[in-house]
Length: 537
Image 1 (cartoon, rainbow, N blue to C red):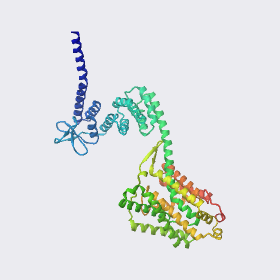
Image 2: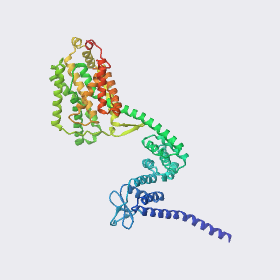
Image 3: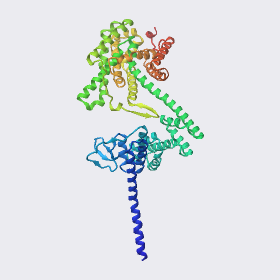
Image 4: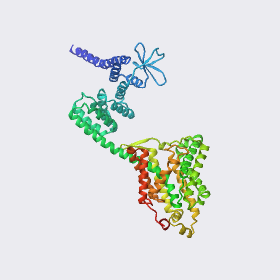
């Protein structure tokens, strides 16, 4: 008798335990039904309450419905039934997730405003905190951080306990701290501890949250928040200075590429070449032509287009420079004013020739995959395109330095620079040294055009944007001195970027120009003057 009673009690217990999941599932379904009914309303307060209830219901249909609502694809019928559509236009019952063969008539989109969008971001974020995809978990943490919704704290606590990725776990902790700090009903001790977590993040979003909270915060929390905000402001100023220095180096590398060829021709030959900018332009258009050929005939080689364009741009611009020197400039040595006017006229001819061939509109030059995108290094945004241009400009400088110091041609060029008459007496053919030097300087300008095509508009006026800055770099660094050109280009680039926030781009350039004029009054030969009898004569 007792055994039979025990069996009956055991069976009843098993039945009760088995009914618990079914009861929970039924409760979740009822909660979801009530939440969907709130969404099919014209009252924003009820819609917001429905979003919160749907996210906390745990129903499997909650995530697709809320994501559809965020994209404007959630609708309700006159009978207050809720449906969502996928991106292909198919209709689904929001409660069951089943496809609907024929959508009912009179569907209206669920109403959304800015407050509802914030609630949606928080709800979608809390639903995807446990996603197996790390990218989705990261995005969910950012959504909750920005929404600062206190209702997401339990979901964050659960996600923190299961997260194994340290970086994502840190994001979860920051999102939880933001929700706690923004919640005036949270315990003051927890809000104070949240300030330390957020201060470690230290970005503009945290600073905005601190400034919002401190207005109505208790005295002890206000002191903590103000100290955290001050630390973030100091860090952001430091990062701003580092960012400006990076931008200055990238601008300086551009100036170095544009000026290094001019430094050679101006230093060796004493020629004021106003057509130097057009050599840069020729290099840029050579890059455009190479990419057009690759796009139409060899699309698989597009990522190699710049490497293919480099030697072609050097040879094309160098050939134009050689012809210019042999036909015009060699007849004007020792007559600087006539040389200036002649090369200015040549620059106008080259610009008009390019307009006639390619048109006056800007031409598109694409970026290879390795130069696209950006990254962040210690809080400083680094674009791959600028980074590669800095590396490229230093490689060009190093290659030119090797040519001048370790080759026979470089030795002859330096001899002509220091004492032209003595070099001629030693058997050096100075006219051909002049011609090849001018061709080398023009070829390097063509290489500069390849790099500049990635950061500037390729147009007939491209070279005019850099000719004045190039002369400033050459004169400031010391005519014909490569190290002076390098130092002057980088220092003027950094100076421009630090002056721009205070004086503006135009006034900043004017101040740099005034500084160079005053500097040249004291040191007419520039920072690093060349040595030699002819130079010093």
